[in-house]
Length: 215
Image 1 (cartoon, rainbow, N blue to C red):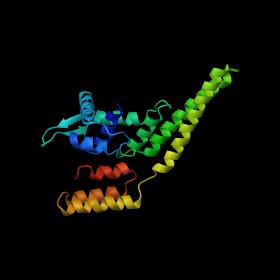
Image 2: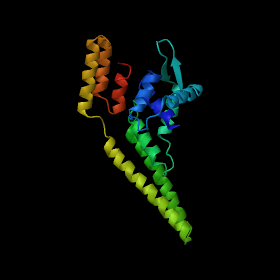
Image 3: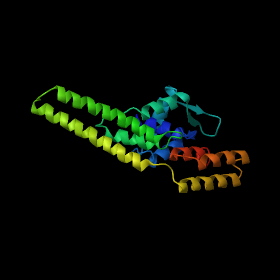
Image 4: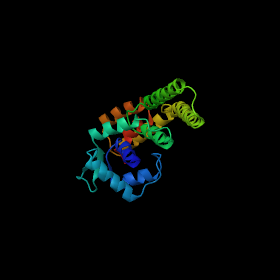
């Protein structure tokens, strides 16, 4: 099902045809192993049936777009903390959060951090209230607390690594927008609006959204 959410995250940047979506997921930018064409087609079918994406067929190729329900589903999934043993899923959520325009990645990280700290506190309280435990239970509990602590420390590291977009990232987006304007893909008004947004962008997803509908 992670392919489904990776597709929703990509489509949050703008409508795309199925072939392009397959190529994008194949690059590894979403953090997922490259899926095959059958997986992408099946995932789009599930998402469409659930009302999370819709297909616009007024083009040479159908363009898939995320729906309002899809955006709500994606937002909720990004902030739902998986089992600490599923470390790869949490990493995937942070990677995808960075790619969704308008998403406060730091807030997403802190939401997971709070959830894990609360879980750690509950387990510590159970340990204190339980008194002396048999060795098997004591070792299992200690392992779980250690795993929770390591995931929390990873989130702290991720919070520092994610950061905001750099001036160089903004400058590159501005250059690309001017190039699109020069060949007639943007009007003066559209260029001005997008340049303002590019210069104030805070996350990589914000910049991706400004260019998502351009070749």
